[in-house]
Length: 393
Image 1 (spheres, helix red, strand yellow):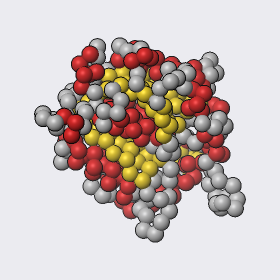
Image 2 (cartoon, rainbow, N blue to C red):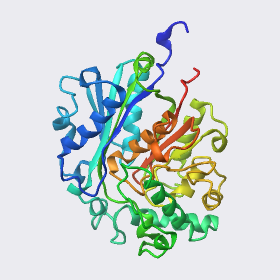
Image 3 (spheres, rainbow, N blue to C red):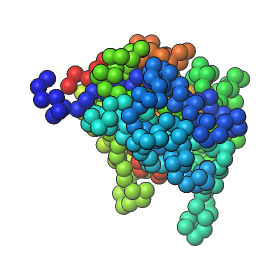
Image 4 (cartoon, one colour):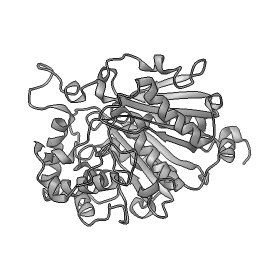
């Protein structure tokens, strides 16, 4: 390759770390929480704090914990004193967009090795009411994100004719997958499909067992270029494509069921990665599904199923961990939801799959995996596709 400065540096994920996730991690401070994930990522990469050139950190809105600009006081805990440190914020998709900012710094050769991390300590906040705007800014008709998204789910059901049992199938699958993931927050050992279906209705048609928990947790990754990948103690995951897209919360013609920003973002990632048939060419998907009905909705939005057919893919069992398109083998957001980190967990879990390091929830033979995150009013999207082999160009 001649004139290497005109080409992007290939980006490798050489270190992945996440915390134990729980309703309340009272054993650690915010600084201790992020350091737990960062230390594990560095150990996985065989590196130490001095080997990191820059840190990129992300989280959801500051008012969740009530600490403004927490990156400033967390710099020391993350070994960032005296180093460049960037903060990213794109609502619930922030974990994904944070990883993409870090990857772009490596790809552009701005920094050789970057530590990226995202976190949330929901036990020190109340996201439900933090996301419920007071009168007169909205009508007093909903509480939290579930109240906002439930009408979109009902619209999807009307549009596609999906039976009301589909959401329970997704929740039952993801909660069973979580039992194979030691880091997952929710471990329901007595989970049954009937238990999901008989759980209380929170936001029609979304039931209690079809919703995400409130979690404390953090996720970190170490990203580097070709030379750093050669020195890594374990095979890396290679970034084959990554993109972000956004659109307003409300505008004339917005499709809340299948947002244009989401489909455009996926199309860009597939183009970069040379993917022409995502259903056949992608081996595993870590998809941002905070409410179970979003699995069939996103299957259509991301091009895995034709319009109106996503729920049929779920109902067929194709998205089970042993199906032909495993979705959320880690248990997903339905089982672990430190909001600021939830998107990065999707990206990291995709990377674990292609590295063959996902443990009991490993998808056999996974070579390419998609990480997906969304946030706000279905308006911010971030995705990457990672592979076991370096990109060809």
